Image 1 (cartoon, rainbow, N blue to C red):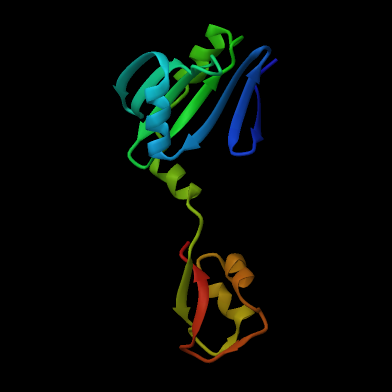
Image 2 (image 1 turned 90 degrees about the vertical axis):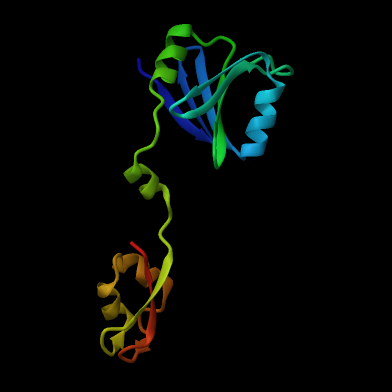
Length: 154
């Protein structure tokens, strides 16, 4: 039987039998403060960022905290996590590719000029994502050539 993963609020939880890993993001200052509070702490610089491993004093759970310039993320390991599962999950961590980062960014509203007079429903075809453009405006609204219309940036 393989790993099971689900979203729990702002966290992702991966389970395999009694093993469990919970991952969630933190603001950079929160990640630094949490890392500083760990007992039995070890730190290293890695390709992912500044990594701190230790035990949360109150919860007595093992944590891996990765601090990056614009925030951090926490990997919380359940006390009964099998070292094989722990090592397998942690070995799978890597930096996101440029295309993965771009895909995670929501499209932004971009104003463009109507290429000709017509209804938004017809003019949206000139936008990078016509379906998203139609969700931003009334498809039956009439525009003159050159009038501003809402599109998305991608």
